[in-house]
Image 1 (cartoon, rainbow, N blue to C red):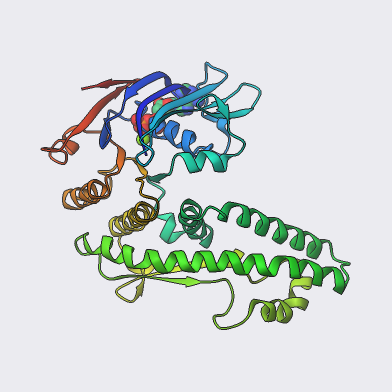
Image 2: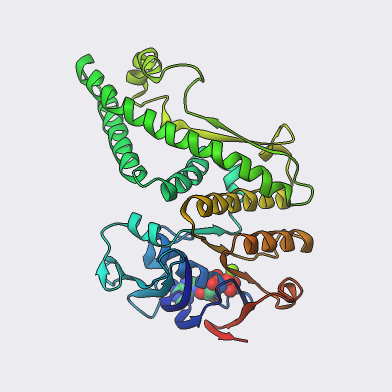
Length: 362
Ligand SMILES: Nc1ncnc2c1ncn2[C@@H]1O[C@H](COP(=O)(O)OP(=O)(O)O)[C@@H](O)[C@H]1O
Ligand SMILES: [Mg+2]
Protein backbone atom coordinates (compact mmCIF):
# COMPACT_ATOMS: atom_id res chain seq x y z
CA UNK A 1 0.00 0.00 0.00
CA UNK A 2 1.38 3.37 -1.01
CA UNK A 3 0.30 6.96 -1.31
CA UNK A 4 0.78 8.39 -4.76
CA UNK A 5 -0.66 11.80 -4.05
CA UNK A 6 -1.33 13.62 -0.81
CA UNK A 7 -3.53 16.67 -0.19
CA UNK A 8 -3.46 18.41 3.16
CA UNK A 9 -5.66 21.34 4.13
CA UNK A 10 -5.45 23.33 7.36
CA UNK A 11 -3.38 20.92 9.43
CA UNK A 12 -1.46 23.15 11.88
CA UNK A 13 0.68 25.58 9.82
CA UNK A 14 0.03 23.67 6.58
CA UNK A 15 -2.69 25.75 4.97
CA UNK A 16 -2.67 23.81 1.72
CA UNK A 17 -0.04 21.26 0.75
CA UNK A 18 -0.20 18.97 -2.27
CA UNK A 19 2.57 16.53 -3.00
CA UNK A 20 3.19 13.74 -5.47
CA UNK A 21 4.70 11.04 -3.32
CA UNK A 22 7.56 8.77 -4.27
CA UNK A 23 6.62 5.07 -3.98
CA UNK A 24 9.71 4.51 -1.82
CA UNK A 25 11.77 7.18 -0.08
CA UNK A 26 10.32 10.62 0.63
CA UNK A 27 12.57 13.11 2.43
CA UNK A 28 11.12 16.22 4.03
CA UNK A 29 13.71 18.67 5.22
CA UNK A 30 13.44 22.20 6.53
CA UNK A 31 14.12 24.39 9.54
CA UNK A 32 12.47 24.08 12.95
CA UNK A 33 8.79 24.95 12.92
CA UNK A 34 8.52 24.74 9.13
CA UNK A 35 5.84 22.01 9.26
CA UNK A 36 7.68 18.71 8.77
CA UNK A 37 6.14 16.89 11.73
CA UNK A 38 2.76 18.38 10.81
CA UNK A 39 2.96 16.70 7.41
CA UNK A 40 3.57 13.33 9.08
CA UNK A 41 0.78 14.13 11.53
CA UNK A 42 -1.59 14.73 8.59
CA UNK A 43 -0.76 11.30 7.11
CA UNK A 44 -1.13 9.72 10.53
CA UNK A 45 -4.57 11.27 11.03
CA UNK A 46 -5.57 9.92 7.63
CA UNK A 47 -4.52 6.42 8.67
CA UNK A 48 -5.61 6.36 12.28
CA UNK A 49 -8.30 8.95 12.69
CA UNK A 50 -6.35 10.65 15.46
CA UNK A 51 -3.15 12.56 16.02
CA UNK A 52 0.01 11.20 17.64
CA UNK A 53 0.66 14.58 19.24
CA UNK A 54 -2.62 15.56 20.80
CA UNK A 55 -5.82 13.76 21.76
CA UNK A 56 -7.98 16.63 20.63
CA UNK A 57 -7.98 17.27 16.89
CA UNK A 58 -9.18 20.83 17.55
CA UNK A 59 -5.60 21.74 18.44
CA UNK A 60 -4.41 20.35 15.12
CA UNK A 61 -6.79 22.40 12.96
CA UNK A 62 -5.07 25.53 11.64
CA UNK A 63 -5.73 28.45 13.96
CA UNK A 64 -7.27 30.53 11.19
CA UNK A 65 -9.51 27.74 9.86
CA UNK A 66 -12.35 25.75 11.33
CA UNK A 67 -11.85 22.38 9.72
CA UNK A 68 -9.06 20.19 8.44
CA UNK A 69 -9.06 17.86 5.46
CA UNK A 70 -6.52 15.21 4.50
CA UNK A 71 -6.93 13.08 1.43
CA UNK A 72 -4.73 10.77 -0.58
CA UNK A 73 -4.65 8.55 -3.60
CA UNK A 74 -3.69 5.12 -2.33
CA UNK A 75 -2.34 2.31 -4.47
CA UNK A 76 -2.92 -1.27 -3.41
CA UNK A 77 -0.30 -3.79 -4.44
CA UNK A 78 -2.36 -6.96 -4.42
CA UNK A 79 -5.43 -5.79 -6.29
CA UNK A 80 -3.42 -3.25 -8.31
CA UNK A 81 -6.26 -0.80 -7.76
CA UNK A 82 -6.13 2.80 -6.68
CA UNK A 83 -8.52 4.51 -4.30
CA UNK A 84 -9.24 7.93 -2.88
CA UNK A 85 -9.12 8.02 0.91
CA UNK A 86 -10.10 11.14 2.80
CA UNK A 87 -10.84 12.42 6.27
CA UNK A 88 -12.38 15.64 7.50
CA UNK A 89 -12.68 17.07 10.96
CA UNK A 90 -15.42 19.67 10.86
CA UNK A 91 -15.84 22.84 12.85
CA UNK A 92 -18.67 21.11 14.74
CA UNK A 93 -16.22 18.45 15.89
CA UNK A 94 -17.51 15.78 13.56
CA UNK A 95 -15.04 13.33 12.10
CA UNK A 96 -15.75 11.93 8.66
CA UNK A 97 -13.81 9.33 6.74
CA UNK A 98 -14.47 8.27 3.17
CA UNK A 99 -13.09 5.89 0.62
CA UNK A 100 -14.01 6.51 -3.02
CA UNK A 101 -16.78 8.78 -1.78
CA UNK A 102 -18.33 6.17 0.54
CA UNK A 103 -18.42 6.84 4.27
CA UNK A 104 -16.41 4.60 6.56
CA UNK A 105 -18.20 3.57 9.71
CA UNK A 106 -15.32 3.27 12.14
CA UNK A 107 -11.70 4.23 12.74
CA UNK A 108 -10.89 0.51 12.50
CA UNK A 109 -11.81 0.58 8.81
CA UNK A 110 -9.48 3.52 8.28
CA UNK A 111 -6.67 1.69 10.06
CA UNK A 112 -7.23 -1.33 7.85
CA UNK A 113 -6.99 0.78 4.69
CA UNK A 114 -3.72 2.41 5.63
CA UNK A 115 -1.41 0.27 7.76
CA UNK A 116 1.18 2.71 9.02
CA UNK A 117 3.98 2.81 11.54
CA UNK A 118 5.30 5.92 13.20
CA UNK A 119 8.67 6.42 14.84
CA UNK A 120 9.22 9.78 16.51
CA UNK A 121 10.91 11.36 19.52
CA UNK A 122 8.55 9.56 21.93
CA UNK A 123 8.96 6.09 20.51
CA UNK A 124 11.41 5.04 23.23
CA UNK A 125 8.33 4.67 25.47
CA UNK A 126 7.62 1.39 23.68
CA UNK A 127 10.49 0.02 25.77
CA UNK A 128 10.65 2.41 28.69
CA UNK A 129 6.97 3.17 29.18
CA UNK A 130 4.19 1.08 30.71
CA UNK A 131 2.73 -2.18 29.38
CA UNK A 132 -0.14 -0.41 27.57
CA UNK A 133 2.27 0.71 24.84
CA UNK A 134 3.46 -2.84 24.28
CA UNK A 135 -0.07 -4.23 24.27
CA UNK A 136 -0.99 -1.64 21.64
CA UNK A 137 2.05 -2.67 19.62
CA UNK A 138 0.99 -6.30 19.85
CA UNK A 139 -2.64 -5.53 19.03
CA UNK A 140 -1.60 -3.47 15.96
CA UNK A 141 0.13 -6.58 14.64
CA UNK A 142 -2.70 -9.00 15.38
CA UNK A 143 -5.34 -6.58 14.08
CA UNK A 144 -3.64 -6.27 10.70
CA UNK A 145 -3.29 -10.00 10.07
CA UNK A 146 -6.37 -11.49 11.77
CA UNK A 147 -9.71 -10.25 10.53
CA UNK A 148 -11.79 -11.41 13.45
CA UNK A 149 -9.59 -9.71 16.01
CA UNK A 150 -11.18 -6.25 16.12
CA UNK A 151 -14.56 -7.67 16.95
CA UNK A 152 -13.18 -10.05 19.56
CA UNK A 153 -11.07 -7.30 21.12
CA UNK A 154 -14.08 -4.97 21.38
CA UNK A 155 -16.21 -7.65 23.03
CA UNK A 156 -13.38 -8.39 25.43
CA UNK A 157 -13.00 -4.71 26.38
CA UNK A 158 -16.73 -4.37 26.87
CA UNK A 159 -16.99 -7.43 29.11
CA UNK A 160 -14.00 -6.26 31.15
CA UNK A 161 -15.44 -2.78 31.54
CA UNK A 162 -18.78 -4.13 32.70
CA UNK A 163 -17.22 -6.53 35.18
CA UNK A 164 -15.04 -3.72 36.57
CA UNK A 165 -17.98 -1.35 36.82
CA UNK A 166 -19.94 -3.86 38.84
CA UNK A 167 -16.96 -4.59 41.05
CA UNK A 168 -16.43 -0.89 41.66
CA UNK A 169 -20.00 -0.23 42.65
CA UNK A 170 -19.91 -3.07 45.16
CA UNK A 171 -23.01 -4.80 46.46
CA UNK A 172 -22.68 -7.36 43.74
CA UNK A 173 -24.06 -10.80 44.41
CA UNK A 174 -21.89 -13.84 43.85
CA UNK A 175 -24.16 -14.94 41.01
CA UNK A 176 -23.85 -11.68 39.12
CA UNK A 177 -20.08 -11.77 39.45
CA UNK A 178 -20.02 -15.38 38.27
CA UNK A 179 -22.09 -14.44 35.20
CA UNK A 180 -19.72 -11.62 34.23
CA UNK A 181 -16.70 -13.78 34.88
CA UNK A 182 -18.14 -16.45 32.59
CA UNK A 183 -18.63 -13.80 29.90
CA UNK A 184 -15.11 -12.40 30.21
CA UNK A 185 -13.20 -15.66 30.55
CA UNK A 186 -13.42 -17.10 26.99
CA UNK A 187 -12.85 -13.66 25.46
CA UNK A 188 -9.70 -13.10 27.54
CA UNK A 189 -8.48 -16.57 26.58
CA UNK A 190 -9.06 -15.98 22.87
CA UNK A 191 -7.34 -12.58 22.93
CA UNK A 192 -4.41 -14.28 24.67
CA UNK A 193 -4.26 -17.06 22.06
CA UNK A 194 -4.16 -14.58 19.21
CA UNK A 195 -1.47 -12.47 20.85
CA UNK A 196 0.63 -15.44 21.85
CA UNK A 197 0.58 -16.93 18.36
CA UNK A 198 1.44 -13.57 16.85
CA UNK A 199 4.33 -12.94 19.21
CA UNK A 200 5.75 -16.38 18.53
CA UNK A 201 5.82 -15.63 14.79
CA UNK A 202 7.14 -12.13 15.34
CA UNK A 203 10.00 -13.08 17.69
CA UNK A 204 12.02 -14.83 15.01
CA UNK A 205 11.62 -11.90 12.62
CA UNK A 206 12.65 -9.40 15.30
CA UNK A 207 15.83 -11.43 15.88
CA UNK A 208 16.61 -11.34 12.18
CA UNK A 209 15.97 -7.62 11.76
CA UNK A 210 17.90 -6.77 14.93
CA UNK A 211 20.87 -8.79 13.70
CA UNK A 212 21.06 -6.52 10.65
CA UNK A 213 21.64 -3.56 12.98
CA UNK A 214 25.24 -3.35 14.19
CA UNK A 215 25.84 -3.92 17.86
CA UNK A 216 22.25 -4.41 18.97
CA UNK A 217 22.76 -7.92 20.31
CA UNK A 218 20.44 -10.90 20.59
CA UNK A 219 16.86 -9.75 21.08
CA UNK A 220 14.32 -11.95 22.81
CA UNK A 221 10.61 -11.31 23.25
CA UNK A 222 8.69 -13.09 25.93
CA UNK A 223 4.96 -12.85 26.39
CA UNK A 224 3.49 -12.22 29.81
CA UNK A 225 -0.14 -13.19 29.44
CA UNK A 226 -1.41 -11.16 32.40
CA UNK A 227 -1.49 -13.97 34.96
CA UNK A 228 0.91 -16.69 36.15
CA UNK A 229 2.14 -19.05 33.47
CA UNK A 230 0.68 -22.55 33.73
CA UNK A 231 -2.40 -21.45 35.68
CA UNK A 232 -5.86 -21.65 34.14
CA UNK A 233 -7.50 -18.22 33.99
CA UNK A 234 -10.72 -19.64 35.44
CA UNK A 235 -8.76 -20.71 38.49
CA UNK A 236 -7.05 -17.30 38.73
CA UNK A 237 -10.43 -15.50 38.67
CA UNK A 238 -11.62 -17.85 41.40
CA UNK A 239 -8.54 -17.21 43.56
CA UNK A 240 -8.80 -13.45 42.95
CA UNK A 241 -12.52 -13.19 43.72
CA UNK A 242 -12.30 -11.62 47.17
CA UNK A 243 -9.44 -9.36 46.16
CA UNK A 244 -11.21 -8.21 42.98
CA UNK A 245 -14.29 -7.37 45.05
CA UNK A 246 -12.24 -5.55 47.68
CA UNK A 247 -10.24 -3.53 45.14
CA UNK A 248 -13.12 -3.01 42.72
CA UNK A 249 -11.28 -4.20 39.62
CA UNK A 250 -10.12 -7.30 37.75
CA UNK A 251 -6.57 -7.91 38.90
CA UNK A 252 -5.41 -10.48 36.38
CA UNK A 253 -6.22 -11.28 32.78
CA UNK A 254 -5.39 -10.41 29.18
CA UNK A 255 -5.76 -6.69 29.99
CA UNK A 256 -2.58 -6.97 32.10
CA UNK A 257 -0.51 -8.58 29.35
CA UNK A 258 2.97 -7.34 28.52
CA UNK A 259 5.97 -8.21 26.39
CA UNK A 260 9.26 -8.69 28.19
CA UNK A 261 11.98 -7.51 25.89
CA UNK A 262 15.53 -8.69 26.51
CA UNK A 263 18.82 -7.99 24.81
CA UNK A 264 21.63 -10.46 25.40
CA UNK A 265 19.70 -11.76 28.39
CA UNK A 266 19.24 -8.37 30.12
CA UNK A 267 16.03 -6.29 30.32
CA UNK A 268 16.32 -3.97 27.31
CA UNK A 269 14.98 -0.84 29.03
CA UNK A 270 17.57 -1.21 31.81
CA UNK A 271 20.70 -1.59 29.71
CA UNK A 272 20.31 0.11 26.34
CA UNK A 273 21.43 3.66 25.54
CA UNK A 274 18.80 6.01 24.11
CA UNK A 275 20.18 5.50 20.60
CA UNK A 276 20.13 1.73 20.97
CA UNK A 277 16.61 1.90 22.39
CA UNK A 278 15.51 3.80 19.31
CA UNK A 279 17.21 1.23 17.12
CA UNK A 280 15.41 -1.59 18.88
CA UNK A 281 12.11 0.23 18.37
CA UNK A 282 12.94 0.35 14.66
CA UNK A 283 13.71 -3.37 14.73
CA UNK A 284 10.38 -4.14 16.43
CA UNK A 285 8.31 -2.06 14.03
CA UNK A 286 10.19 -3.18 10.93
CA UNK A 287 9.68 -6.77 12.05
CA UNK A 288 5.94 -6.11 12.26
CA UNK A 289 6.04 -4.74 8.73
CA UNK A 290 7.95 -7.83 7.54
CA UNK A 291 5.43 -10.13 9.22
CA UNK A 292 2.53 -8.16 7.77
CA UNK A 293 4.08 -8.44 4.32
CA UNK A 294 4.62 -12.17 4.71
CA UNK A 295 1.04 -12.75 5.75
CA UNK A 296 -0.86 -10.19 3.70
CA UNK A 297 1.40 -9.64 0.68
CA UNK A 298 1.37 -5.88 1.21
CA UNK A 299 3.82 -3.34 2.54
CA UNK A 300 3.07 -0.77 5.20
CA UNK A 301 3.92 2.86 5.30
CA UNK A 302 6.50 4.34 7.67
CA UNK A 303 6.59 7.83 9.12
CA UNK A 304 10.04 8.59 10.54
CA UNK A 305 10.08 11.90 12.32
CA UNK A 306 13.56 13.35 12.65
CA UNK A 307 15.38 10.23 11.51
CA UNK A 308 18.86 11.73 12.08
CA UNK A 309 18.14 12.36 15.77
CA UNK A 310 19.86 9.81 18.01
CA UNK A 311 20.96 7.54 15.17
CA UNK A 312 24.47 7.65 13.74
CA UNK A 313 25.02 7.48 10.01
CA UNK A 314 25.67 3.73 9.86
CA UNK A 315 22.50 2.90 11.73
CA UNK A 316 20.39 5.29 9.65
CA UNK A 317 21.72 3.53 6.57
CA UNK A 318 20.86 0.14 8.06
CA UNK A 319 17.30 1.28 8.83
CA UNK A 320 16.89 2.61 5.27
CA UNK A 321 18.29 -0.62 3.81
CA UNK A 322 15.74 -2.61 5.79
CA UNK A 323 12.85 -0.37 4.67
CA UNK A 324 13.98 -0.85 1.08
CA UNK A 325 14.24 -4.63 1.46
CA UNK A 326 10.66 -4.63 2.71
CA UNK A 327 9.63 -2.48 -0.23
CA UNK A 328 8.01 0.07 2.11
CA UNK A 329 7.05 3.60 1.30
CA UNK A 330 8.43 6.00 3.89
CA UNK A 331 8.38 9.66 4.76
CA UNK A 332 11.34 10.84 6.79
CA UNK A 333 12.03 14.26 8.16
CA UNK A 334 15.09 16.15 9.35
CA UNK A 335 16.47 19.66 9.51
CA UNK A 336 19.43 19.34 7.15
CA UNK A 337 19.25 18.19 3.57
CA UNK A 338 22.88 17.10 3.91
CA UNK A 339 21.95 14.49 6.50
CA UNK A 340 19.98 12.67 3.82
CA UNK A 341 22.03 13.26 0.71
CA UNK A 342 24.58 10.53 1.28
CA UNK A 343 21.90 8.25 2.72
CA UNK A 344 19.75 8.23 -0.41
CA UNK A 345 22.61 8.58 -2.87
CA UNK A 346 22.19 6.10 -5.74
CA UNK A 347 18.68 5.27 -4.68
CA UNK A 348 15.42 6.48 -6.23
CA UNK A 349 13.80 9.04 -3.92
CA UNK A 350 12.03 12.38 -3.72
CA UNK A 351 13.06 15.32 -1.56
CA UNK A 352 10.73 18.06 -0.39
CA UNK A 353 11.83 21.34 1.10
CA UNK A 354 9.44 22.57 3.76
CA UNK A 355 9.36 26.31 4.39
CA UNK A 356 6.71 28.13 6.44
CA UNK A 357 4.14 25.42 5.81
CA UNK A 358 4.82 25.14 2.09
CA UNK A 359 6.35 21.97 0.64
CA UNK A 360 8.22 22.16 -2.64
CA UNK A 361 9.70 19.21 -4.49
CA UNK A 362 13.40 19.57 -5.27
N1 LIG B 1 -3.25 24.82 15.12
C1 LIG B 1 -2.19 25.43 14.56
N2 LIG B 1 -2.38 26.40 13.64
C2 LIG B 1 -1.34 27.03 13.06
N3 LIG B 1 -0.05 26.75 13.33
C3 LIG B 1 0.20 25.79 14.26
C4 LIG B 1 -0.85 25.09 14.91
N4 LIG B 1 -0.30 24.20 15.76
C5 LIG B 1 1.03 24.34 15.65
N5 LIG B 1 1.35 25.30 14.76
C6 LIG B 1 2.68 25.73 14.29
O1 LIG B 1 3.06 24.86 13.25
C7 LIG B 1 4.47 24.94 13.08
C8 LIG B 1 4.98 23.62 12.55
O2 LIG B 1 5.30 22.72 13.55
P1 LIG B 1 6.03 21.35 13.21
O3 LIG B 1 5.35 20.68 12.10
O4 LIG B 1 6.15 20.62 14.49
O5 LIG B 1 7.46 21.86 12.71
P2 LIG B 1 8.79 21.03 12.38
O6 LIG B 1 8.52 19.58 12.57
O7 LIG B 1 9.14 21.38 10.97
O8 LIG B 1 9.83 21.53 13.33
C9 LIG B 1 5.03 25.41 14.40
O9 LIG B 1 5.64 26.65 14.19
C10 LIG B 1 3.80 25.56 15.28
O10 LIG B 1 3.88 26.70 16.11
MG1 LIG C 1 9.36 18.28 13.95
